[in-house]
Image (cartoon, rainbow, N blue to C red; front, side, top):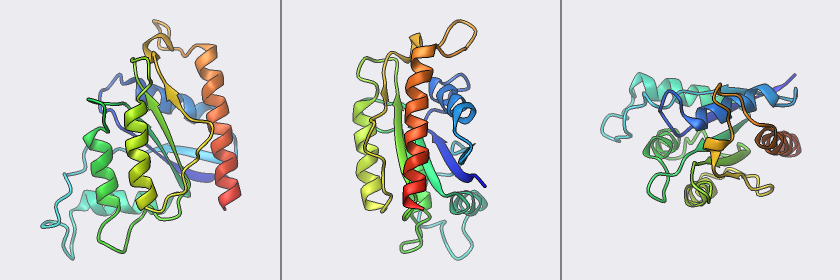
Length: 182
Protein backbone atom coordinates (compact mmCIF):
# COMPACT_ATOMS: atom_id res chain seq x y z
CA UNK A 1 0.00 0.00 0.00
CA UNK A 2 1.37 3.40 -0.94
CA UNK A 3 2.08 6.07 1.64
CA UNK A 4 0.05 9.26 1.43
CA UNK A 5 2.28 12.31 0.95
CA UNK A 6 1.10 15.91 1.28
CA UNK A 7 2.32 18.40 -1.31
CA UNK A 8 2.16 22.07 -0.33
CA UNK A 9 2.54 24.56 -3.17
CA UNK A 10 3.79 28.01 -2.26
CA UNK A 11 2.40 29.86 -5.25
CA UNK A 12 -1.30 30.63 -5.46
CA UNK A 13 -1.28 31.66 -9.11
CA UNK A 14 -3.60 29.53 -11.25
CA UNK A 15 -0.89 28.87 -13.87
CA UNK A 16 1.92 28.65 -11.35
CA UNK A 17 5.08 26.84 -12.40
CA UNK A 18 5.20 25.43 -8.87
CA UNK A 19 1.77 23.90 -9.28
CA UNK A 20 2.79 22.49 -12.67
CA UNK A 21 5.85 20.89 -11.09
CA UNK A 22 3.71 19.46 -8.25
CA UNK A 23 1.36 17.91 -10.81
CA UNK A 24 4.29 16.38 -12.72
CA UNK A 25 5.55 14.90 -9.44
CA UNK A 26 2.12 13.34 -8.88
CA UNK A 27 2.30 11.65 -12.28
CA UNK A 28 5.84 10.33 -12.00
CA UNK A 29 5.91 9.31 -8.33
CA UNK A 30 6.75 5.66 -7.72
CA UNK A 31 3.90 3.42 -6.58
CA UNK A 32 5.21 3.36 -3.00
CA UNK A 33 3.91 6.91 -2.47
CA UNK A 34 0.77 8.81 -3.50
CA UNK A 35 0.98 12.58 -3.68
CA UNK A 36 -1.93 14.82 -2.65
CA UNK A 37 -1.81 18.55 -3.23
CA UNK A 38 -3.29 20.20 -0.16
CA UNK A 39 -4.76 23.66 -0.69
CA UNK A 40 -3.22 26.27 1.62
CA UNK A 41 -4.34 29.50 0.01
CA UNK A 42 -7.60 29.64 1.95
CA UNK A 43 -6.07 29.22 5.40
CA UNK A 44 -6.72 32.32 7.51
CA UNK A 45 -3.51 33.96 8.70
CA UNK A 46 -2.40 32.30 11.89
CA UNK A 47 -3.72 34.18 14.91
CA UNK A 48 -3.56 32.69 18.38
CA UNK A 49 -6.57 34.79 19.39
CA UNK A 50 -8.82 32.76 17.07
CA UNK A 51 -7.06 29.42 17.67
CA UNK A 52 -9.07 28.62 20.78
CA UNK A 53 -10.68 25.43 22.09
CA UNK A 54 -12.80 25.59 18.95
CA UNK A 55 -10.35 26.63 16.22
CA UNK A 56 -11.46 27.93 12.83
CA UNK A 57 -12.69 25.12 10.60
CA UNK A 58 -9.94 25.65 7.98
CA UNK A 59 -7.28 25.18 10.71
CA UNK A 60 -8.92 21.95 11.90
CA UNK A 61 -9.34 20.52 8.39
CA UNK A 62 -5.77 21.40 7.38
CA UNK A 63 -4.29 19.85 10.53
CA UNK A 64 -6.32 16.68 9.96
CA UNK A 65 -5.15 16.42 6.34
CA UNK A 66 -1.50 16.73 7.34
CA UNK A 67 -1.90 14.27 10.24
CA UNK A 68 -3.21 11.66 7.76
CA UNK A 69 -0.06 11.93 5.63
CA UNK A 70 3.21 10.07 6.05
CA UNK A 71 5.35 12.88 4.68
CA UNK A 72 5.37 16.34 3.12
CA UNK A 73 6.85 17.80 -0.04
CA UNK A 74 7.09 21.58 -0.22
CA UNK A 75 7.17 23.05 -3.73
CA UNK A 76 7.93 26.72 -3.36
CA UNK A 77 8.84 29.82 -5.31
CA UNK A 78 11.03 32.54 -3.89
CA UNK A 79 9.65 36.01 -3.29
CA UNK A 80 12.10 38.82 -2.56
CA UNK A 81 14.83 36.33 -1.57
CA UNK A 82 12.52 34.65 0.91
CA UNK A 83 9.78 32.21 1.60
CA UNK A 84 6.22 32.95 0.41
CA UNK A 85 3.87 33.96 3.22
CA UNK A 86 1.40 31.20 2.31
CA UNK A 87 3.95 28.46 3.11
CA UNK A 88 5.00 30.11 6.37
CA UNK A 89 1.36 30.50 7.37
CA UNK A 90 0.67 26.80 6.69
CA UNK A 91 3.70 25.89 8.81
CA UNK A 92 2.47 28.10 11.64
CA UNK A 93 -1.09 26.75 11.52
CA UNK A 94 0.18 23.16 11.56
CA UNK A 95 2.61 23.78 14.41
CA UNK A 96 -0.05 24.98 16.84
CA UNK A 97 -1.30 24.69 19.47
CA UNK A 98 2.13 24.43 21.04
CA UNK A 99 3.01 20.81 21.74
CA UNK A 100 0.54 19.45 19.17
CA UNK A 101 2.40 20.04 15.92
CA UNK A 102 1.21 17.95 12.97
CA UNK A 103 4.68 18.16 11.41
CA UNK A 104 6.89 16.23 13.86
CA UNK A 105 8.75 13.22 12.43
CA UNK A 106 7.22 13.55 8.94
CA UNK A 107 9.88 13.10 6.23
CA UNK A 108 10.12 16.26 4.16
CA UNK A 109 11.54 17.41 0.86
CA UNK A 110 11.95 20.98 -0.36
CA UNK A 111 11.80 21.77 -4.06
CA UNK A 112 12.23 25.40 -5.01
CA UNK A 113 11.09 26.50 -8.44
CA UNK A 114 11.87 29.84 -10.07
CA UNK A 115 12.24 31.54 -13.43
CA UNK A 116 15.45 32.98 -11.97
CA UNK A 117 18.85 31.38 -12.43
CA UNK A 118 19.45 30.39 -8.79
CA UNK A 119 16.21 28.42 -8.56
CA UNK A 120 14.84 29.80 -5.31
CA UNK A 121 17.94 28.98 -3.27
CA UNK A 122 17.11 31.48 -0.49
CA UNK A 123 13.52 30.31 -0.05
CA UNK A 124 14.68 26.69 -0.06
CA UNK A 125 17.12 27.26 2.78
CA UNK A 126 14.83 29.56 4.73
CA UNK A 127 12.18 26.84 4.71
CA UNK A 128 14.71 24.24 5.84
CA UNK A 129 15.41 26.34 8.95
CA UNK A 130 11.79 26.03 10.05
CA UNK A 131 11.72 22.30 9.26
CA UNK A 132 14.63 21.71 11.66
CA UNK A 133 12.65 23.32 14.48
CA UNK A 134 9.54 21.36 13.52
CA UNK A 135 11.46 18.08 13.84
CA UNK A 136 10.89 17.13 10.21
CA UNK A 137 13.74 15.00 8.86
CA UNK A 138 14.42 16.70 5.55
CA UNK A 139 15.99 15.01 2.55
CA UNK A 140 19.40 16.62 2.05
CA UNK A 141 20.44 15.12 -1.29
CA UNK A 142 19.82 15.58 -4.07
CA UNK A 143 19.14 19.25 -3.62
CA UNK A 144 16.21 20.53 -5.63
CA UNK A 145 16.62 24.06 -6.98
CA UNK A 146 14.89 24.36 -10.32
CA UNK A 147 15.95 27.56 -12.02
CA UNK A 148 14.85 28.94 -15.38
CA UNK A 149 11.62 26.97 -15.01
CA UNK A 150 9.92 29.10 -17.65
CA UNK A 151 12.02 27.17 -20.20
CA UNK A 152 11.13 23.84 -18.55
CA UNK A 153 7.71 23.68 -20.20
CA UNK A 154 6.68 24.08 -23.82
CA UNK A 155 3.91 26.39 -25.10
CA UNK A 156 1.34 23.62 -24.44
CA UNK A 157 2.40 23.23 -20.80
CA UNK A 158 4.28 19.96 -21.33
CA UNK A 159 7.45 19.51 -19.31
CA UNK A 160 10.70 19.00 -21.19
CA UNK A 161 12.59 15.72 -20.79
CA UNK A 162 15.59 17.21 -18.97
CA UNK A 163 13.42 18.74 -16.25
CA UNK A 164 11.25 15.62 -16.03
CA UNK A 165 14.35 13.43 -15.60
CA UNK A 166 15.59 15.67 -12.77
CA UNK A 167 12.19 15.55 -11.07
CA UNK A 168 12.20 11.74 -11.43
CA UNK A 169 15.50 11.58 -9.57
CA UNK A 170 14.12 13.84 -6.82
CA UNK A 171 10.83 11.97 -6.33
CA UNK A 172 12.48 8.54 -6.39
CA UNK A 173 15.06 9.63 -3.82
CA UNK A 174 12.26 11.07 -1.69
CA UNK A 175 10.27 7.82 -1.88
CA UNK A 176 13.40 5.99 -0.68
CA UNK A 177 13.80 8.59 2.10
CA UNK A 178 10.22 7.99 3.27
CA UNK A 179 10.74 4.22 3.20
CA UNK A 180 13.99 4.49 5.14
CA UNK A 181 12.32 6.56 7.88
CA UNK A 182 9.18 4.40 8.11
